[in-house]
Image (cartoon, rainbow, N blue to C red; front, side):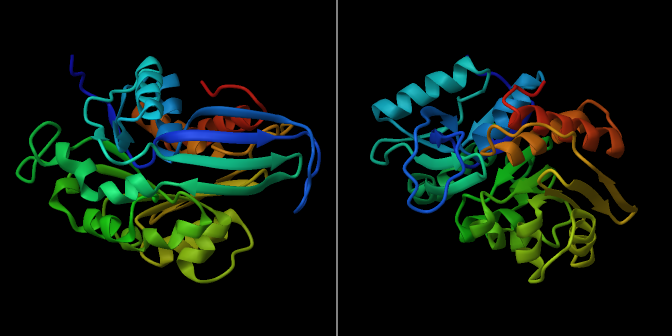
Length: 297
């Protein structure tokens, strides 16, 4: 049975393989720890948090028809996501991400999102064939978009009439892909969610803090920008000014997915009617809960 989603999450949905150790690590470290496999990817992490806040996220992504893909679709359904519109490839394997984390944070990571990139605009077909929208009647709800898509596809999305009525929330997959978001820097419907390093890459400079970075993105043409800086601060800037708050102090036990949790919690707060200050506060508390090992609610 097809269900109408409350929000669309477009981008990477894959398996996260994460190795974590309580020890400080450096290049070449060989330490005891735990290795887990969980559903992940930027779009998936955002969708999981949205579902915990009571929303019904729909996924637009590519997932293979291999055993890993069938297992992933089952996991998505069990977590409360709408998977009716996922592009299921017969010849592309299900993507995966591998990371190593120590007590001193993320040590290294490799994202294998080649199938998502190869699928290209096939994942957007439901937005043009009438299932979720069309060029004549574009989808008009929230869309969370991640930067794991190809540069060309992101450029096409930024200009596409299929997104003309959407409340578009955009995040890079990682600092290495931050510049893929350039087409949205002057987009009139996009809200950017980046960290301090990613903001600097987009503006081709270095910022001292989140407020400076958020204001810098708006000065470069962004309609609105939210910038996080780990445990130091987070800022929300638009033409009306900049808000800055400090996150709660917590013991950090994990970092992968923290930015996605922040973004999802912020969207959920605004969808529920929160003002800018309350939405920023709720997002920071959700991210703090996540990195300390709990589930944001």
